[in-house]
Image (cartoon, rainbow, N blue to C red; front, side, top):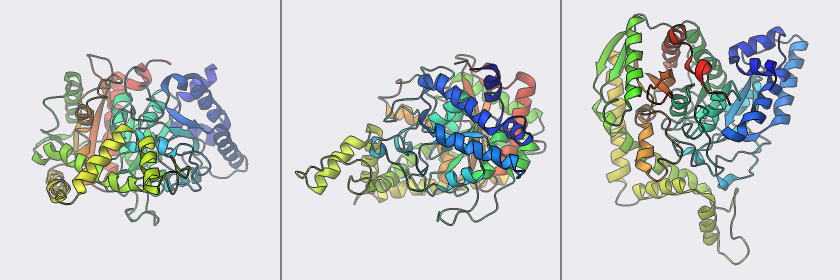
Length: 501
């Protein structure tokens, strides 16, 4: 890569947009620099499943033509983005990390995709992910794992590890992820990037392939809090095509990110978010973050949310139950993969052969678990009880937010673990989402941002900020204040210290 390309890929999304708007850079130059970076490093990282070189350059040329005509450009016009391969994209493949949809080219755009295009964001391609978003490590992709740019032998988080790895390796300044139990925040934590799960219903799910419909939520991923806010504003807002979409104004997230402050805010620390299983370096960096918040003028309030200890168990009944229903559509008869349709097999046999070949082990595990939990005689004991726990968790959050403005915790109990270390131990894998799952069950908004490196392994640690539903702006207000303090004192942990590829 040339020196000019290196300089371009290190810019923030906000800086790139400003340079394009002023004519200092062209959108084509920016896109070519990132495509060159993908060509140079993605063979090692495997962040992308599909790179749309021609489409990206065409979008970039359209932005440059708009500027030449004197048309006003949006706040992210010409900025490249990596899109998680769970959002339908007209004319290019959408696989959801699964053999079941290998080669499928959708005839329509998801609402998120359409809004990105309308905002003149340049979509570079589709990123790797755990199959159907089921996983915490991106090892469950049918197309092979993604490496963490900090250490390619370690996981980049999941299910959106491709999006987080693209950011951390400077292949894109922006990315989109989805968060069902932590799949935006957990990858952000272990790669030293910023990831936001908006309030449930704040970003449209139309065209987002469903895993667990009452939990799934798309959201922005970036390397800075401001960049995440700018992207959040582009993709959020009511969508009549999504029955769960909230018909409310988008919170003023960009304004909050530009005016970060915690002075006078009440910040809660939940006692259930620490203890056995938490890495010492993660706890150390979290405690330092709490001390910093206090120093910046926040009041720290200790909270007791006893139902949070039951969140993991409830989630792994609710999510598999919903996935068993959602994935029933993949029967080998209507679209996607079809195996055994040679005239010698019945429709039932074709469906069975297709699902055997098309679904990976983790997807099969969750379908079986969910089907069992919903079956006659077990529904009330398992799925019904899990929904009652969900109500208790929501009430714990409601009580907590009567006392505090936001809650903070570690994003994940550990830093990135080695690829393969937990592959044969599903329970150990599920524990990666211990801190993130309660927020999904309640539908609140949450963010992860870097808070330093764990001293024992020199890998990124994430600070999670949780806000009440529809108060997403609080995430950015607190996140921007913390980020600014970290940069002033220690330098940004990603930009300054991430290993070069």
